[in-house]
Amino acid sequence: MNWNADTVRMGQANQAFPEPIYKGDEFNGRAADAPPLPVQRAFFMKRIVRKISLLLSGQSGAHLISIAIISGLLAYIGTPPALLLSAIAAMMLVRFIQYFARGPKPVLSAYLVRKKISQVVNDEIRISVSLLAVCYLMTWAIPVTTLLIFAGVNLGFQIVWMKTTRKILKRISAELNKTERPLHAKHVVIVGTGKRAQKAADVILDSAELETSLVGFLDYERRGMWSYRDVPLIGHPIEASRIMSTRQVDVVIVAVEARDLSRTEPLFATAEEMGVPVCYLPVIHDPNITSVKPAHINGTSVLLYRAIPENQFLLFAKNTVDKIGALIGLVLFSPLFALVAVAIKLDSRGPVFFKQVRSGLNGRPFELFKFRTMCHDAEKIKHRLSELNEMSGPVFKIRNDPRITRVGRILRKTSIDEVPQFINVLLGHMSLVGPRPPLPDEVARFEPWQRRKLSVKPGVTCTWQVGGRNDVDFEEWMRLDLKYIDTWSLWEDTKIIARTIPAVIKGSGAS
Image (cartoon, rainbow, N blue to C red):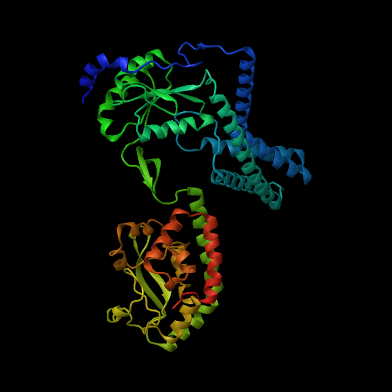
């Protein structure tokens, strides 16, 4: 159905959409049924409490907590007043910079209420590190232990504060929603009634900090007394001009299904002509694994669908730990290099190091370094042993591989053969923790879902490495790698490294 045909149909269809009755939400701002004065006063007080809760659960509350903690700690250790004031100013500056340096501007401005513990942890770690950097650069005489204590105490208080204020907000908002909506709330019209439209409605209705009222839905096909969560259907998109002329509409959210997208272009033109902002929910793909983020390619705006971690600060921290850890590992094991090299040379012909092409990030080939543990022509005779393969899938593993030398068996049992991979970590080919890098011919036989393990840097150790190695079959190996990607965190990396040490000592699953 095209726009003109809709116009003809809607000439007689307007009566199918009864005008909804709103309390305290009319275009002229007057309430239809004014409640008794005591009820108005109670409602007014709840609004005040809600406003204060919103204010304190956002950046203002976070600022106050941080300033109170840093002031108390510095005063306790006897910091001079001038230095104390400088530290407070630095704290405020760091928090303001973090606030204004956030991502894309929100469509519906709101108090910056943090809803997840991970978000609080991420914010407060950034702020603590930034404050530590400022103190170092300014050469302030503030003990590092004091700043570390601040980081821990501040993080704990911020998490408790976030959870407490969220409960208060939820309770107060539920009580307010039973009566009238705030007269000065932003008003939104949603175009569409499908899953995307209902998801947009859920976001608004479940977010007290938005202070937004839903006027209603517009839809191409639905008629009559339809509603979602008490938000009514108020018309057809062809009526957008009339609705925006007779009601307060601050934003139009277009959340139509793919089949209706081509019919919606005139609505964009109408909203543009009337100066009403339009927010568009893309209908290209509903991701199951990936997250969707706004991005740009040299200035051209795009939507980025990504199934891997993308927190730049945490990834920078991971990369820093990789480089420092690899350097420490090489220094600690360097005395062994000469002994291992002599042992390998005395045991069999061939080079000390074994170099093999592996598939790294996104399938990029690189040379993996290991101490040689097999005979020098191991790759040439590999095809003769294919019937002895003990691993499922495209991976080739034999528990008692006849190609392994006597010294090689010791190196494998103790995992010393893996030490040269610290060189790969320093070169940026690998991380300390990540899925093990497969061979290119193994990758060629991967199923599509298995290729996702290539979406992050490979690692020296991972969940598979500490979970049994050869005792884990290929399918389970792949699932462990993907689970690691989906649940990645610095804490998870720390736990894997801690579990790797006893696994290496025991030789669990090594062959």
